[in-house]
Image 1: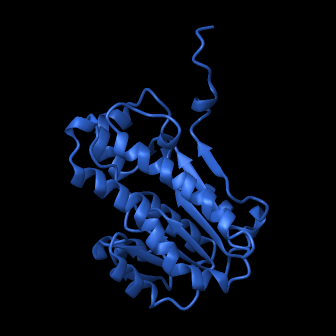
Image 2: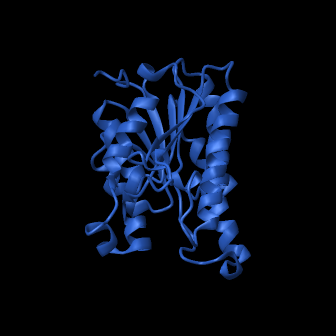
Length: 244
């Protein structure tokens, strides 16, 4: 299927690794001019090697001034994909989570997309086919022990996307969210360990598979899809806990 993305311009945050890197490479393969944003300049350069004509923006998504300065270098945007995220404390009850740790997770995972999209909106309004995709998680719907900050942040991101789709309904800017279950990324391996993913007793998806969902949701082919969350969890949340 021709996704009709060739010739468009998309901003991808967290583009240095993981899902952000996979999204950037997938979009570049579709003929999209990608604007890559990450706080790690060296990682950005590695991603950019597979993205002809990419614009690199080194910035921290939680820093209002850095985000504004970075977006000031962009003259056109048809899409924004917010991939930058952190897991924060894993395996800790809230009595063992500091306020600084809690604030860090919410700052990157929720405030970051807010700052990026607020700065990007003037450019998106000028596009005839503008689309936004937020990367959430199945942790917005189900919870694992010891991940309250992460779960709260990803649930907030889902509702942030829904609210934005309503606020922007008369502009033509679509806003959707992708919520994958465990994805094989450096962050996941850092949290769970290599063995947990290499010998997983549960389905694990690749960052490329998530990037394919994102590409479709950015495409004019999905123009009727707005304000929704694509939950890619191998059907886990559809299953009843009833023992029968």
